[in-house]
Length: 296
Image (cartoon, one colour):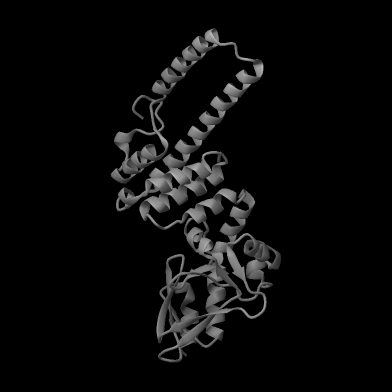
C-alpha cells in the first residue's frame, strides 16, 4: 500500500478493478482515499464544527444527532469500501466492467451500505463482482431480495445449492425429499417449503418436474463436471429432475451463493438416472462402474 494506510493502492490493481472503482466513485462518491487524507479531512471537519458551535448554541439533543449522523456515515463508507475491495479482487482480466451501469451501482450500494456482517458482505461482493464481470446478470429485483434476506436464509440456500445441476440452466435435482442424501444436510420438507415461501424455489410436493425436448444426447454439468446422457429416442426425450425448480431470483443467485459440490450426491443422481433407463458417460474414474452398467 502506497502510504501504509490506504485500503487499496490503485496502481496495484488490474484494469478491470480500476474501472470498477472509478464506476463506483462516479455513482456513490469517492471510495478509496489514503487514510492520511481522511484524517486531515476529519481534522478540518472538527475545526469547522468548533467554529459552528461558537456561532450557534447546539442543544444536547442536537449535538447527539450530529454525532450519530457522523457515525452512521462512517460505517456506511466502511461497508462500501470493504464490499468494493472484495469485489475488485475477484475480477478477472476479461471482466466487462466498462459496461457496468452506474445507476445499477448506485442502487446496489443504496441497498447494502449498512451491511457489516462479514459473511453477508462477502455475498454482496460476489454479487457486485458478478454484475461487473457480465453486466445485466443481476436484476434490481434480485438486489432488493438480497437486501431483505437474513444470514440464516442465505446459509440455507447455499446448502441447498449443492443439489443444483446445470442443464442448459441451473436445475435442482431433488427426487425424494425424505432421502438421507438431502435430510442429513438439513434439506427437508420444512426447509424446502421455507425456501419456496421466500421466493427462491418452487416446490411441487406431489407430481414433480421433468425437463423436456432433448435430442439423442445432452450434456449435464455438476460443478463443472460433465456427464453425457444418452436417451432411448432420437428426439423429444425427457428426464425427471424431482420436486424443485429455481425461481428467476434463485437462478441468478445460485452462481454466487458459495456452495460446494457433493460427491455422494453426484453418484446418487447418476444411479437415479441409470434406473430411469438412461445411458450415462463420464470422464471421472470413480464413476466407471456406472458407465459400464449403463452401456451393458
